[in-house]
Amino acid sequence: MKKTRLREYARLIVRCGVNVQKDQEVMIYADLDQPEFVKMVVEEAYKAKAKKVVVEWNYQPLQKLHVRYQSVKTLGAVEPWQEARQEHFCQVLPARIHLESSDPDGLKGINMEKVTKARQMSYPILKPYRDRRENRDQWCIAAVPGEAWAKKVFPGMRTSLAVEKLWEAILDTARVTDDPVKAWEEHNADLAKRCDYLNSLKIRSLHYTAENGTDLTVGMMDEGCWRGGRDTSLQGIAFNANIPTEECFISPKKGMAEGVVYSTKPLSYRGQLIDNFSIRFENGKAVEAKAETGEELLNAMISMDEGAAYLGECALVPQKSPICESGILFYNTLFDENAACHLALGMGYADTIQDYQNKTLEQCREMGLNDSMIHEDFMIGCDSMNIDATCADGKVVPIFRNGNWAF
Ligand code: ZN
Ligand code: ZN
Image 1 (cartoon, helix red, strand yellow):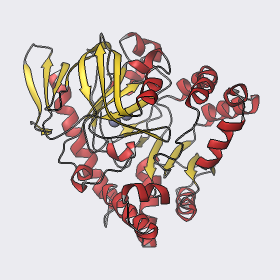
Image 2: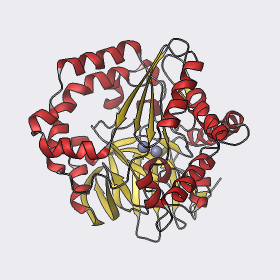
Image 3: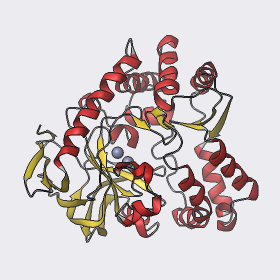
């Protein structure tokens, strides 16, 4: 890939993605796949006047070794210095950049029970720090190709060619055009307009149906608010949390989901694939989950904690989105979630509640915002998907017809 285009992409992540502020600290989380690109991002962050940029490298094979050889107690422990670091993050609110490139099934065979137990140990200690940062910091998830990932997306292709193809797909869907910043301005404005319309309807529930058997009704909070594209932190800094993004989304009301929903794309959860699955909901709770691939993993995910069985997000993405039209199955949620309507199990987003700036997280949760240690998107959109909204005034309004916006 041409260096100039990569440089544009790095700049886009720093300026449009997290919008690094003068004297701000920046944390970058990356795998070992594209060190040259990570260097570009670091340089762009310094050019945006970042005070300090720290890169934390990840390497899946090491993750596997740690899980294999450490005891659950060691894996799940949070050392005092790690807590001190969390405290530092809460104090200085660094901009967080996550650069994804890992192998979608790179952690296959890992002992999930051990991972789950360790996570259940560390989570209660880390959660208060996460809650304190919620909506206050800027963050952005973007992607770069890894070799194993590229081979999964383009099987049968020479590795170098597959990586090049994946770069192209990533940069095209991320709108790295001649003027990416302008392209993102227009895209953000378009998503904002759609959200304004959805908010004007005062939707109380959504009814999803599709030819694959999906028939699900999900209730909304009275105070719910659709969001899409650009976000603004409580410090008043605009940022784009996902590059790419095509969704208008909302957090539904906990306890109000009835019916069954079928997946339409595989889900890579913690480095392992779950595919061809369905989930049945009663009183908002996932009570039955079946999968052709990864059923055990799916059920482990749903039982991570109490909130993992409840929905945290309803997102609308038309089949006519650039990612869907590329026809590429990415095996990566960042892309696949932006190619299809999706739901998420687990934590809901407080910023999808009106006037959340003046509410505490506890108040948001009392209104029906779900809380969990997980937030996992799974894709349900397809060409035959219809969605109808029941509004506060009792009117039923078509939102989606045959997989695309009905308005
Ligand atoms: Zn989403
Ligand atoms: Zn999500």
